[in-house]
Image 1 (tube, rainbow, N blue to C red):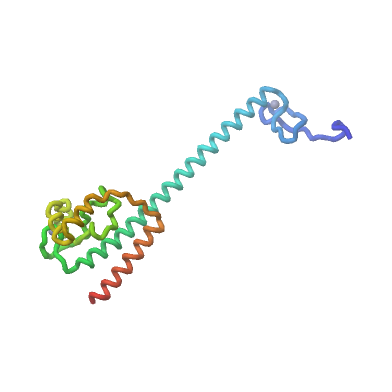
Image 2: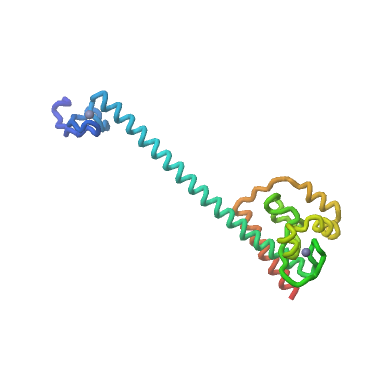
Amino acid sequence: MKLNDIKIKPKTCRICRDKYVPYRALSPVCEKYECKVAYAIKSAEKAAIAREKKAKREHKEKLAKIKTRQEHLREAQRHFNLYVRIRDADLPCISCQRFHSGQYHAGHYRSVGSAPHLRFNELNCHRQCSVCNNHLSGNQLKYRQGLIAKLGIEAVEQLEADNAPKHYTIEEIQAIKVKYKQLTKQLKESQS
Ligand SMILES: [Zn+2]
Ligand SMILES: [Zn+2]
């Protein structure tokens, strides 16, 4: 059987719109050189746009993941801080050593912003009055004195020297949240 015997339906060239008989079944353009070149350029442009779209989508997905990670961190921090406040319920403000009425926070000795690896370190976080925490920026010097009285100088110096970064996975952050939720519950039960 010769090729000429088969009726091949002519196709329309995607570039010049001429009718042509496709010798290669997959060729979407006619046999003219300009059409082949024009089609190759068009395909490359299309591929570049697709790649760009894919990169944009992946970037967006990545951002969404980071956002949920930050949400997880915030949630876990809330439970950790609540635990610290209840753990220290009978103690005065770590900085000013006063038992005054008003709001108390869980104040980090080394702040979450500057030492995020210590954000869930129990030795680094203590009951602190809102005056010291908010208005005196942690009342740092007094905090150190209170911390030395509570933990001893060695533990404080260890804390100050601890710069090993911590990289929590989302699963680990969730586990921290669960841990402090349970610890708070146990504390509340034992205190009541
Ligand atoms: Zn053509
Ligand atoms: Zn205070």
